[in-house]
Amino acid sequence: MIAVLLITFLITLFYMAIANRMLTYVKVLALQGVLLFFVVFIQLSEINVVNLIFILLETIIFKSIAVPLFLAYILKRNRITREAEPFLPNFVSLIITTVIVVATILLANSIQEPHLDKIFFVVALSTLFTGLYFIASRRKIITHVMGYLVIENGVFVLSLAVGNEMPMLVNLGIMLDIFASVLILGIFLNKIGDVFKDIDVNQLSNLKDY
Image 1 (cartoon, rainbow, N blue to C red):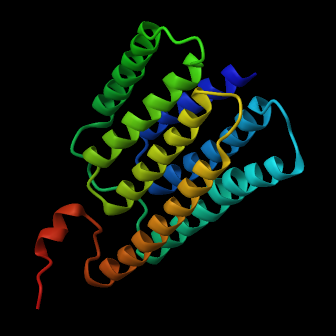
Image 2: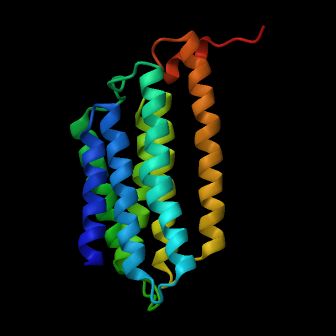
């Protein structure tokens, strides 16, 4: 069951690679949060009330509800419906994402570590590198925020690749860090939206100090 959930998670990365509408990115991020909830829920060897509450807060409440709603508000406030033309065509993005996944599979097979769960390792590294690729290949600032959230999901999965128990304090630190980052970047986007109608990273070159 975990393998099916993780494969579905990988499919969401391919879907993001060819998606054009910003709202689609938000929906995929929400779906990833739900998938991570079920993965962690099944993966935990011992379910107790504290772990369950923490999982709900970090995955369902934070990843699937709070952040997507916040990003949707940013999109609506700045009247963003479609992303700016990416630096590379969607077909090329799909190929690069596929290459990333294949490369991580080959890397995982070359590692001889009995305590490493390879399917988690493959999904984690694929998500990390795909998130970096999204940041590098998209023009709009908001897509950079979403790429950063994809990277955070990869870190989350990576924490499950080395053991059966979630390192609670590490994940709590990640959650607070991402929450602060999204909040700050959201305020930043709102201010930029008051000046530029098109939230494109190329527009940042027009900012000057007065």
